[in-house]
Length: 59
Image 1 (tube, helix red, strand yellow):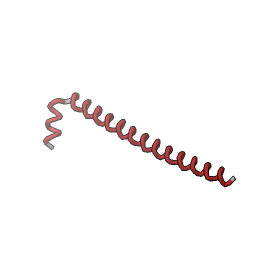
Image 2 (cartoon, helix red, strand yellow):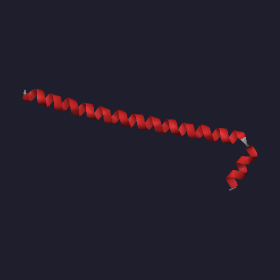
Image 3 (cartoon, helix red, strand yellow):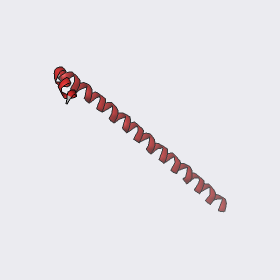
Image 4 (cartoon, rainbow, N blue to C red):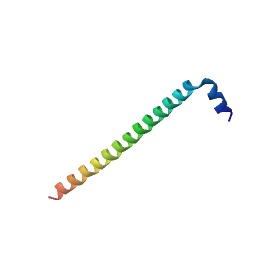
């Protein structure tokens, strides 16, 4: 409750700042998610390469 009362004194500025913080958190989360996807893809590419190599050896 105390926070709401404090925000109402400043009005629009705090609301704008809050939305910027939320957007920054969202973009950071998206960046982490994309990095995780890239990691998974690179691991699967490595294992695919190993499989192809071992099959080529078998002939």
